[in-house]
Image 1 (cartoon, rainbow, N blue to C red):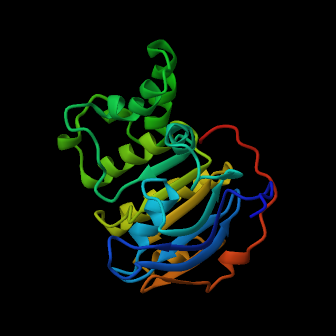
Image 2 (tube, one colour):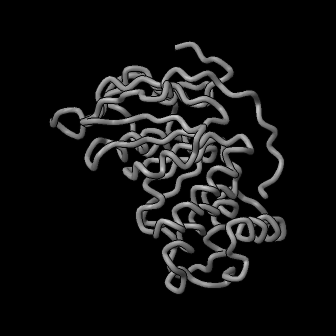
Length: 244
């Protein structure tokens, strides 16, 4: 696999199985381009979460090749994987916030892990919580927040490091339709700054809310291409400045 400059991720004939069972993903090939917005859809059990795990490097495939940011990540030494994972923001359906930490400290966690000094992280974390509309809940713990507020904290944590790619697994599954649309608008705002966004959802109504999005559909571990997502040319480069 050659590595063009205009790709974020490329899968080539990837398969995944757990143990001796049949493959849960079969012959998966696609390219994700910078600055594009993708929906990954399919029925429950189609393999969406398994595919996302491959995308955010939590799982290695059983076969095939995966190139990410120009590097073959299948053969990459494990000690080098954290540097690539830091370029990927992940939003989980169940939030995965740390219960005893405030909203501020949950969002600050990735910066602290990467070694950012305390005096240098206060403003970006406060700005990020303001961006998701939670500056008034900055000191509150997850248990005191609504489901939508917890998901917005999770989004802020996922994007505080300005990732090249954001992966969201059913991010609207635990919120009402009005909040789901608000969360989607946050993803769009991030995408406009140049981040490649991949949102897995079974909610077909969401697919119409982002007209320029591309759709990849999974059915029993096979990938189809209803909008040309697997061969879509990259958009022009987008200037990355600030979230607003």
